[in-house]
Amino acid sequence: MSTKILITGANGLLGQKLVTALAQYPTVRVLATGRGPSRLPVGHLAVAMNEGRFLYQSMDTTQAEEVIRIVGDFRPDTIIHTAAMTQVDDCEKDPDACYLHNVLAVRNLCQACTPYGTHLVHLSTDFVFDGEHGPYTEDAVPAPLSVYGRAKLDAEHEIAAYDGPSCIVRTVLVYGLAADMSRSNIVLWVKKSLEEGRSLRIVADQFRTPTLAEDLAEGCIRIALQRATGLYNISGGEYMSVLEMSQRIARFCGLDASLLQPVTTAELGQAAPRPLKSGFVIDKAIKDLGYHPRTLEQGIALILEQWDQTKIHQHEQ
Image 1 (cartoon, rainbow, N blue to C red):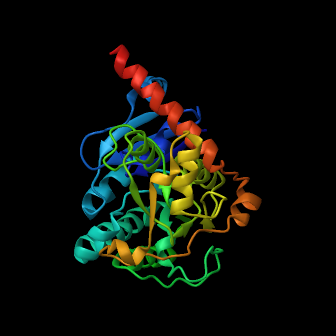
Image 2: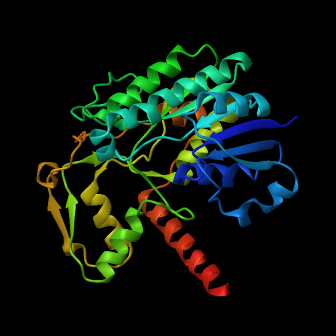
């Protein structure tokens, strides 16, 4: 018997990793959705497409009638909701758009799922915390600093009010490589800049547990297939500053880490306030789900391997 999983935000970094990984499960049917046409790497999905286990459909989660219709047609067992407005400074400057994409979209999904008791897996963030007491466990009390953080906490409340089975997945500083990425990749950005001899201003007082996109996807899939409910921290297992992360990228690539210029969050003058010490304790996910993230160096190695494969493929074309 097949399991039907609908993914929102399928064109994004996590969405692409979820679709690619789920395509390897012969008993899973995937409906990938996103705004506009598919930007997914079709080569990885050829077998699933030929076997009728994969379909892409445009869906705007802010449009309630559209969401209700598509969910009703597909009747997924689980929805993994990754679509969101995640540019933190943009959210600070445009709170209405932030609320629309991060809260009302979740309400639309809850409404669409209610008649079918769909298992709803929702992606949240470390930005629901103020960053004074990290790394955080699942029972820590949220205290968001920014418009984005408050919206994501409001979205968690929408999920908590949903009548069906649900799971909130909090994550932090997701990095990885995906096709047609609209946002830069920290590993390649640091590598390319240092190779060109350019110095970089890197924040030194923000501490995180960086999360490889493949690991986050694996955690979400385990939650979906086990129909886990409640709240889980799914992140990397190493606690470090953003500066240390950049230094470790430099060392792994054999580049000059002295070009990395430490700066404070205050010196950056960003529109939205950031939590300084966030990051997560992931013991619950390890115990309940069998989740085991890779080290940062393993993540860097995977990204560089993928980048080399991408360049080889482009050269062959």
